[in-house]
Structures are given as structure tokens and as C-alpha cells.
Image (cartoon, rainbow, N blue to C red):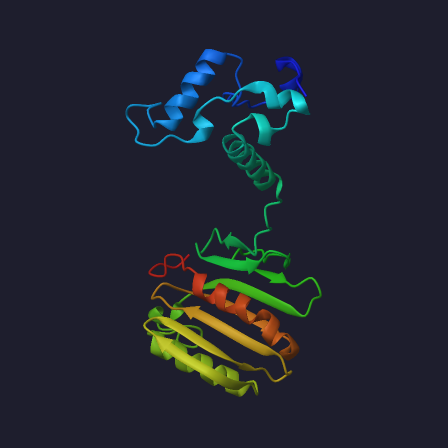
Length: 247
């Protein structure tokens, strides 16, 4: 099948040209065939592929003209496959983000929250924010507070990360919460367990002389396997603001 160039290229945005493996020049065809036999078509090469030598067209008139018969099909196929693959990749939907990162303007901390969690009403003093899962069975709250312990008010502040750590443990015990994990690493505090109402809680506290930033997760025990990765991600990516200063 022979078509015009305009017809073949109609609707295309990218074109590629390759030489046809057939030709009508009998002298050129005979010379190339002899050269192929003697491996002398190209003086710089010891061997030459048959596809590099044009063939006589007589077989083309025995039936329809297909790429396998007439053209350097491998070259064209590679070009076409590459374009198709690029087009498919461009059409594939970008996967939704698993988390959204939120920053607090007052205390300057950053907290990653599952992207499908819904925002709660922010407090008027701008100390933090809260997000709830679509079914309302899990929530994460990130907030900051000024550390008044350095000013002598240890009832609502602390003079060291160790003191803050001990205060948090005592607070949970006084509320009837069980503590299944506790850790103090530098100025980073982690406490988790089962609260008095049967929910799982997880706290990551970043202590400073001027302020303290906290991330707090609470969720039903039945969701532990489902939310474990999200809790770990939020804890590992929780970033404090300027903890040396009050805000």
C-alpha cells in the first residue's frame, strides 16, 4: 500500500524519517548487493547489516507494502514505542499525596498529617491545629506552648527535658493511662500507651528552654495496624520551631 506523504503524516505532531529498504535504481541495487557480499559497502566497517543495503522492489509489488517488508522496521518501531510509552506515562494520573505538611505561624513547627484527614477549628491564640480522620475515629493534634518553667513556674513548665519527661509520665499515670513505651533522647520525648478510655495515644514532645512543641495522636485500638505507618511518619517528620524563645 503506497500513500502520499501528506496522508501518512496527517494529524502527527512528531515525525521520523528513515530510508526505505527498497529502491528503483537497478545499478545502485546491484552494486550494493555485490558490496554486501564482499563486505565492502562501507570501507570503515568490516561487516554491514543487510538492512543497510537497499533491496530491489520487485517483491513489493506482489502484495501490500508492510513495515516488515519495506522499511527499517526496528528503527521505526523503537521510535514509535518510545513515543507511545512517553504518552502513556504523561496520561497516567499522579498518585495523591499520602501526607500534607502544615506549619504553625506562631511557634514555627511543622507537622505531617494524612492527606485525607479533616481540619478542626483552630484555637484563637494560634498555638496549634488538629486534624481528624474521615470517620472520626482518629485525630492528630500539633501545638506549642511557652515554657514557663525557666521563669520559675514549674507547675506548667520545666527546667529540663528530663523534668518534662517525668512530668508527662506522672500526668498519664494520674489520669489512669497505661504507659507501654517511654523514651527520652536528648530533648525529644516519646510516650505512648492506652488511655483510660481505651484509646491508643502517642506523644512526641520537643523540649526547649523557651517553648515546647507537641504532637499527639489518639485513635481506636482497632486502628493500630492501619495507622501505625502514619503515626511513625508524623513522628519522624515532626519539626520544631525556635524552642529557645517563647512565642
